[in-house]
Image 1 (cartoon, rainbow, N blue to C red):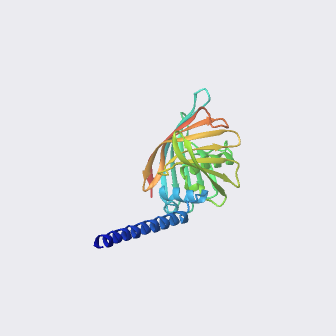
Image 2: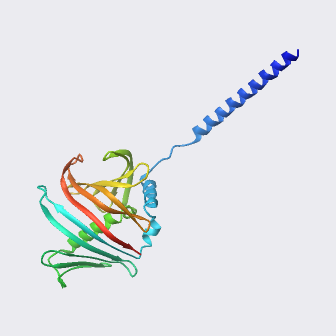
Image 3: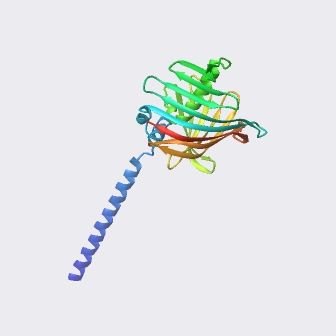
Length: 254
């Protein structure tokens, strides 16, 4: 009888342990079903990218920024069209003042924008040979790309998350951005794990450009471009030729 009672106790313990295990499995399965996968939107992805790139609040708190930008532009036959070193200085302490200075073999140029006024000087004399629209486009192109991803965070931008894709052999988040007041369509690519900015492809009114970030740099907590290349492509993103290469240096942020 003692042996029988011992056997019964062991069987009861086994039954209790089995019941507990089944209960835990049910609980865990129920919890798994209640856990919803993260839904990524264009806006939520941009917010994460801005946080990992230095923070929007910190970016808006910049008082001044300067850097040097060396670049070459090539035509489809690989002939150099422009080989230039520019000095950029931006000051936001009293409104907005931006200036770009550069030289060619004959002249020294300075492009200045103060609030809504924008002027270009050649050897100290106002240069009226370039239209205001052309000056605005040059300044906008320089400041927009440098300020990415923060310059995407506007009320006029429409941001769409397209999922994970391959960018230059790496899995990347693909973010599509259009602007209500523009015709360009941007596709930006960020590393799936680290959110590092890998590059972008942009469709403009008259061409397609693929830009690859070859090297980034961290300055005062901000992730900024160091070296990048730009290629002209067809509508299927196939490279046609190298259009430009850029190198940024001597960043100073206050």
